[in-house]
Amino acid sequence: MDKRAIAFFDSGIGGISVLSEALRMLPREEYIYYADTRHVPYGTKSKEEVRAYVLEAAAELMRRQVKALVVACNTATSIAIQDLRATYDIPIVGMEPAVKPAVELSRSTGRRVLVLATPLTLSERKYAELVSRVDDGSVVDSLALPELVDTCERLQFEGEAVRRYFRDKLASVDLSRYGTVVLGCTHYPFYRRVLEEMLPGHIRLIDGALGTVRRLAQLLAERDLLNPAGRGRVTFLSSGRDPDDIRRMETALAHMRQLREAVNG
Ligand code: DGL
Image 1 (cartoon, protein in one colour):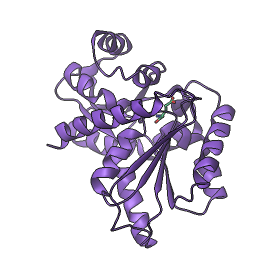
Image 2: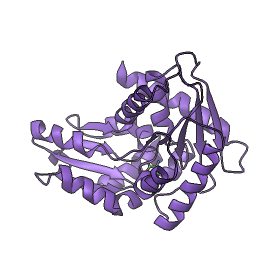
Image 3: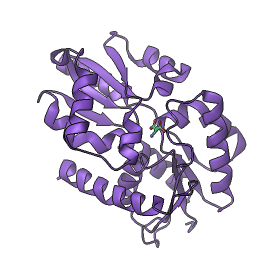
Image 4: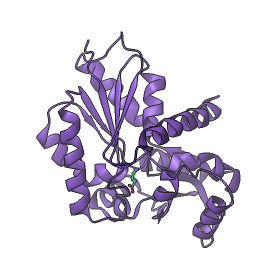
């Protein structure tokens, strides 16, 4: 048993979509959630910049003696997970777009897979390797949504401007060909409700949060690091100067819990 906190890290509020799963599955842990709001968004920057930001944030979290680190950001994972694992010897769990389960689903639906993610995630070798490993029937396509992270950071989760954005982005996509849409950025599950309303009813939306938290739980159990006595407290931290950051993160967590409850019943 180990009472130290588990650190969650993202460029902004996106990783809260993963934290909310952790609070459901591991409610007796203590958490630190760190948002690099000074540098958000990552997905439109260069990989050198993003690598430096991620290493700086990880160093800050390690000073707080955390027992595990969840890189709750697909972009940061694709750029820096190897460096992090080479530097620190606590369990480090990363994220990648849920392409594998989506390809498995496509075998039964007979329809294609559309991966939504940041430009940087989609242009990285890690993504190309993932697709070539699991996409044996060439059914996976992708679409970058470079503007959506900023919209999400403003807590703008629905409304006409958001709908117009998705309509424009998807205008040239023949949705009848797709059976599964992968939310390959941790900010995107905040748009699950809007997307469910806008996309044809046969399309399933999947994200990687549950798989990531299962992996975290498994690693903690294997290394005897679980905490049966904690209270599920979350300490929010940000690198930004905006005093409003913490309130935004709390609002985002409340919103995500509602969304997940609606989905999980
Ligand atoms: N939430 C991050 C992800 O999962 C990226 C957001 C950003 O572009 O900063 O990819």
